[in-house]
Length: 192
Image (cartoon, rainbow, N blue to C red):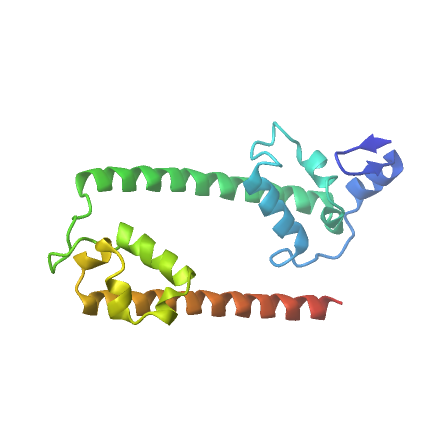
C-alpha cells in the first residue's frame, strides 16, 4: 500500500490512476481540483518547487485530483506553480517599488484645506469605534463631534460627511457579503 498524508491507496489503484488517460476532460477553470490546488499552493501546503513535492505525490493527495488524467493534472499543476511564482515575484517587486515611492514622496500631513489627513488618523479610528458602539444613532453629529478632542481638528460639516461615509461603506460591505452568500447558497443548491 502507498500512503499519503490523508489516504491509503493500493498499488493497483495507484497504477490505474496514473495510467487513466481515457477520462473525458472535465472543465478545469471552475473545478474543485483547481480551487483546492491553488489554495494549497498559496498556503504552502504544496510547495511551489516540484523538487520538494513531485506531481505524482500531489496527485495522490485529494480525490478531486483523480478526476483528471495524470498527465493533464501534472501539466496544470506545473502551470499553476509557474503562475503563482511569477505572481509572487511581481508582488515583491511592487511592494519594494511602493516602499521606495513612499520614502521619496511621503503622504502630506495636511489635506488641501489645511486639515490633518483623515485616512489613518486617530480621529478615523475613534469614529469607527464609535460607530461600532452605535453612538452615531444615539447622538447627533454635533454632539458626537464634541465627544473627542481629535474630532475637533475637523469642521463639523467635514466630520458629518465622514460619519455618513463610514456608515455607507459598512452598508456596502454588508450588501456585498449578503450577495456573495446568496450566490454561494444558490451554487450549492444546483450541485445537489
